[in-house]
Image 1 (cartoon, rainbow, N blue to C red):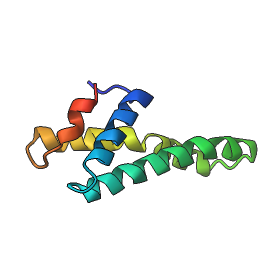
Image 2: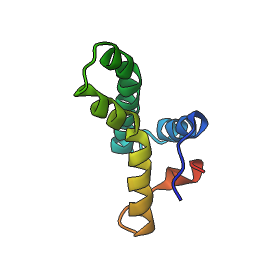
Image 3: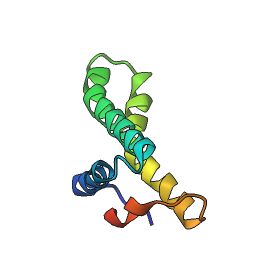
Image 4: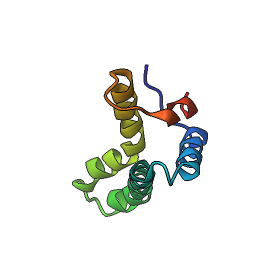
Length: 92
């Protein structure tokens, strides 16, 4: 069952990545990219709405859900034993 990521869970994941940055540099950069997309979506939806830019609404929604989709993808890869994911213990 999927649930929305809380800020606390996102912070725990980020702390894990910072602590293991030297061992897992690609994971560290990927999580930073997910957080950047999330922030861009949060910041961008209001101007897109105010300027009536209908084309930007789905992009903002997709960007806001990027961390959730990334965690779901990593969880699936971990469960099917295609990719090991040590930080999943930080997500509820």
